[in-house]
Amino acid sequence: MKLANATWMNDVQIQAQALASAQIEADAVVVFGTKAEFENASGFPGAGACAAAVRSGLFEAECCKAYVVATGEEKAPVLIAVGRKEEALTEKQLRLSLAEAARVAVKHRLSRVAVIVPEQLVEADAAAAQSFAHMMVEGFLLGAYQRVTYKKDAKPAHTFASLNLYAAELATEAWNEGIKTGQAYALGTTYARDLTNLPGNVLVPSTLAEQALELAEQFGLEAHVLDEKQIEEKGMGGLLGVGKGSVNPPRMIVLKYQGTDEWTDVYGIVGKGITFDTGGISLKRAANMDEMICDMGGAAAMLGTMSVIGRLRPQKNVICVIASAENMPAGNALKPGDVITSYSGRTIEVLNTDAEGRLVLADGMTYAKELGASKLIDAATLTGAVGVALGSITTGVVTNDDAFYDTFKAAASRTNELVWQLPSNQEYWDMLKSDVADLRNAIPGGAGTITAGLFVGTFADELPWIHLDIAGTAFLASSRGVDPKGGTGVMVRTIAETILS
Image (tube, rainbow, N blue to C red):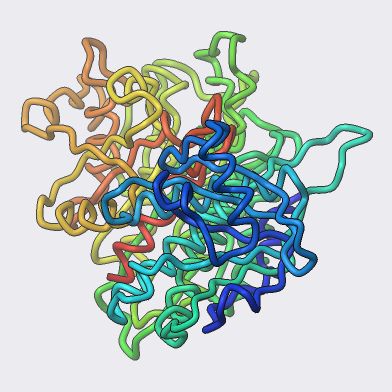
């Protein structure tokens, strides 16, 4: 399988150095500036050419927009000038600016990139310096992502040999610490993007399990996988029911990270891993069904989060559970009107086989609890309704614990991933009631994102729980900000930030 970006990004040499701009040797130098600063530029490679471009109107120095110019200097032949506002640089602007610089460097196939750290950031205290370094490295690597193609004559992805952050008087210890976390967050997100972009004939439940086991081996995590026989023996009727119509049988995948002496205060992170979703007997329309390769975006987010955890080794405890299946129509497939028994013992009336994600998550949530989770976060490309409400910009959230959500929301504000809490009043919970079972998996009459989330939350029982509906944000039709077209790896950074903070 081609997890090309996750592979090459892992090998990029990244560091901060106290070095004057005249001493820099690189294929390209990245410099930030306002229009006024660039108009009177001096002291860095290509400053004269950049100033001329601004004066002539070729470069307006708009915020987070880049301009490329040849410097005429052998040690640093290319300048990437990035505009900024007159106000102090924000963390969001740093991410976006470095992502733009990375895309320019990819386009011109520049391998060794040096960034001159703006004076405002050089003067920051240690905590702020770590944060700035994190944002810069994270933004650059996220912007450098290149989706793998399968064309006969496809060029290999452009790779970077090095990314260095420079200033004459840089507190390198704090900056290099921030670089470490920024790279870990970016690599986890990249891993999730690569997984999400894999074709459905390449990524099936068994190969997703293999990838998870490789990830566990890489970072020394405990792991195990339940096959279809073990799933049936345990009575995981939700996962088994969804997967039984496919020739590619389901898998329940578990990764465990223990960062403290006692297995207490455990974060349970649960991902929907539907490697392709036809809708089953409740067949989807043909238009855009190809995008259902992303229906394992929740699983990708959780595995990406485990990549971050594995790299940074925090003193935290995390259990990751992925419920993976392929939802296909067949003579033995789940049918509307069937009643199944979940791993919790609750019975479910299946009214729509295309509402399958909540069925597999039900068993995943119960299994995470059994394995010791004391608080739960699940992520899933669960409903089309969330895209109607929030578009492809914001992730919908349903929760049973406002204090837990406040912590999560604060983390999201630091990662610049947009989230919005939806209501969870008792009236919505009541909509889940069935005449013939404990629950029904589809509810007519609107509030689809809320009721789908609350269905999953039923299996959290009394534990603090957050549900993330990433159906609108996991896979984009065109690039935006730090995110590429296709898989975005959304919520990896925020989930990781929630756990680490």
